[in-house]
Length: 220
Image (cartoon, rainbow, N blue to C red; front, side):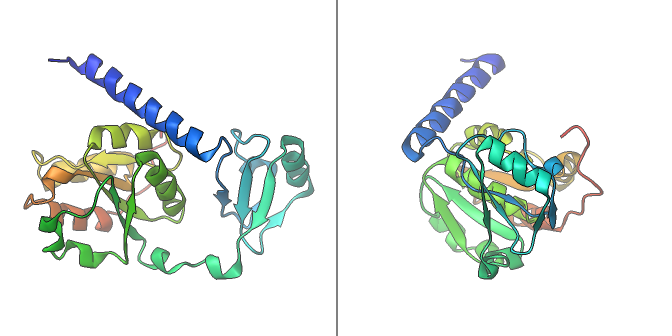
């Protein structure tokens, strides 16, 4: 039996392998990073961007001359969003249900839970799913992630910008889950596929989307 430290080492190693394989299959360039500010200055340009990366800005965003120069120096491409893509339908409800590594369990199809979401999105890889959620979360939206490996999903998504992840725990009641979500201003709730039939899940899911956070904790 592995102790806690050994288990964390194993999970980290698995996540590293998944990330490395995904980047190998999809190239090393960073996918288009969305900057939603109306005015783009050098302060809004992330430090991690490198040559060959691309950022996407609002159709009418104003880019200062200094920011333009910095993009050129770093070799970063700048693309404006198409006008039709600024308010996609999936963003209207500000909630998303993602399934990683497999289809929807039959027990979940029989519940009312799925009716709360505009669509169900499926991914084979937790890293690919995380990048999709990152862009979605920048719009102030929240996501439920259903997966066979919740521990790996939580670790992988904790490495991505904008994601504040909490794992659904069937042993905890509503108040405990609410405290955990509020403590990190959670915008992603990870659910183990084996727990989809738990009687607490629909109520906790509903509460997750209703929670109002005063502010994102400064240490995040």
